[in-house]
Length: 154
Image (tube, rainbow, N blue to C red; front, top):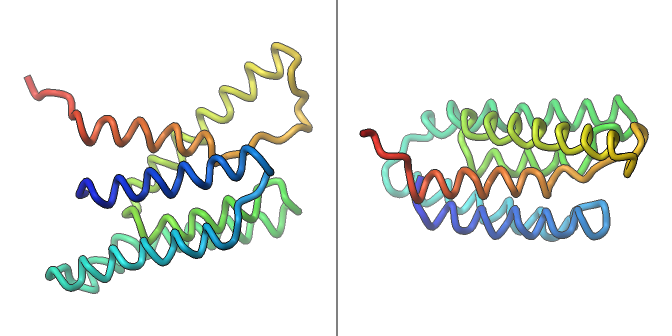
């Protein structure tokens, strides 16, 4: 994964996290712009010789996960935010399935851990919701640090 893609993805997820934290929802224009940039990175990859079948095999399942999250959001009547599901559909253009799975898993674990601590401290109750995008952004920061400064193999 190149540094330009990670830098752009960092800015995109930071913007989504800020919007989700401030208003409890993501802006459709931000989502559309981020999706367009992610698609642009895939087009550049095609022009640089990456095969279409490789892109579809690596990014297609990630998009399907986003669609499944969207379906879950509709079925659960908002327990999973529609914006969160649409963000994961958008992220499929940015990250391959493996990285997106790790991103989703770590952000959900971080969110759940924070929720438990807030409930134990009586700051929130179990009916309150937490925005997912700030936790996702924290996970992106961790992955970015590991990408820029990988642990030595010694």
